[in-house]
Image (cartoon, rainbow, N blue to C red; front, side):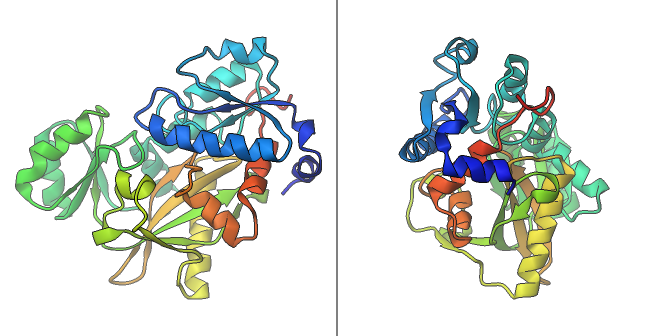
Length: 324
């Protein structure tokens, strides 16, 4: 990490008045409320002058009026992880955590992310966009079954269907289309579900230990992610050292390819048949709840939840207008 982050760890009050942005208007509001509450408590426990700020209840202009010096973004999904709030904070001149406008907008759009990864020669499952049930059926004929069908611009498996038969095309399309006009059909990779947290920007970015997610019946859905305790996590994942290093390096390349900054998380499938890793998506404002994965990886690397929050906050900056 950079020396400014170390200074702030010694003197958290130097971070000034901090708004923890959480809640918001997305389909992930409930999770964001949990993330934000955890971050707020952690920052306050270390002496930061941190305050709750819900953009669904207040206008962002209040950040300037009330004299906030920086913002910790604990919003998930649309209007928080998609570049919109980042753009508003740039205009207001409020340094913020995480990726900038462009990387945030790219990261939430799975199809756009995958196109960029493909141009960089990074492995990702085959995909196609669907705008009708017939398109979903055509994609299933191309990729085979099972196939993943999901909104291109949503998170937390919202609107996701694992399509296992051709007669599911209409229902899978409609479920995903409720959340986004672009429906992503993706080749289904059978294997082990992994995730890699990244901390830092540019040449200072580093991957934290790889986590394996072992969900009941292999179903890591919204409930299993945030509200159940029978999903198991292995951190570090039980992988040969060389393979773990390969997956960490691949995830770091994926993070940097779309211009991520500050922190994030890259989701990976390790195909069972040949142990080849495939990139699924990147999260530019990951969860920070009691079930969340970035804090878990940080603990495995010897970093407490409170220290993680401070390090992320210390990296807050303006990406377009320069540091304030």
